[in-house]
Length: 315
Ligand code: BDR
Ligand code: CA
Image 1 (cartoon, rainbow, N blue to C red):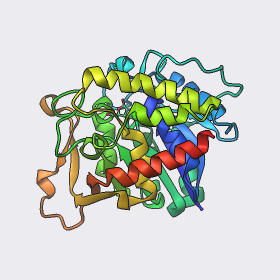
Image 2 (tube, helix red, strand yellow; image 1 turned 135 degrees about the vertical axis):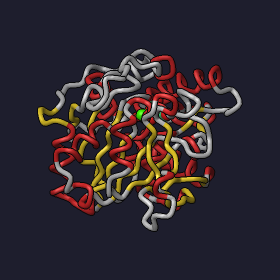
Image 3 (cartoon, protein in one colour; image 1 turned 60 degrees about the vertical axis):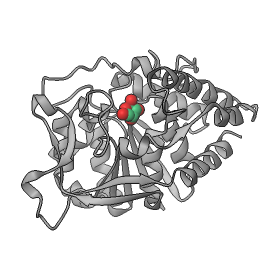
């Protein structure tokens, strides 16, 4: 059975990513690492604990990750996304304080240990900045060839960014870390805005969770409705909220949800193009592309799978 680690800045769509990973068959979620972005790292960790508790999975450990970029002083950890995910990151919905604490081992060390323990059986899905993974790679470069697959939510190739004209939020937080990850020998798939802005959820779907009459269904409906309401203001043309992070989990388990292209990518860290994910002009003819970039998505099949999984989980 495949083992999965999520690395999250939990966040509303990160919370849906946890639910998807728990509901998907044939994968064992062995731990969650916390990151910063939607909220600060310690709060992301607590949110993950709360979501796990809501879903009855207090057996899954949560590790504290880095609190900001390790390689640049150009960072702003105070999230602009508080407007999108709420001050508490989970749509201002109240969940009980978790009964458990975060693990004492660091997120990067947990990734390194799991890479050695499970090697090609390990799937890593970061849906926040890539700070923890870049740190793990610096501490132990061997993990690049050990980990089976890394599927990130981040970046944008064919569409503009969502926090600047060129940058997507997760990459924008720590482009140096992202570039280290992109240009490493990791087996890397990029699930960026090109595809995540095409998988949308509406209140028609969250109403189905509400109608289950369970605590998990009602709380998730409340949390995600907050996100849907914000999207109505910030991106009314979309007609729903984007399933960014749960799509990355879906693609990591079933790459056939998307069509993709292998490209030599890098992340621009110049001030003008800060955080842009784009083809590496120095490697245009390199026959061994470093990143699999998702370009189109089977929205209907993904949404159907997403709803089947989450509805069964919330019952
Ligand atoms: C990404 O940024 C965060 O706000 C979301 O959780 C998602 O991971 C989208 O750009
Ligand atoms: Ca996220």
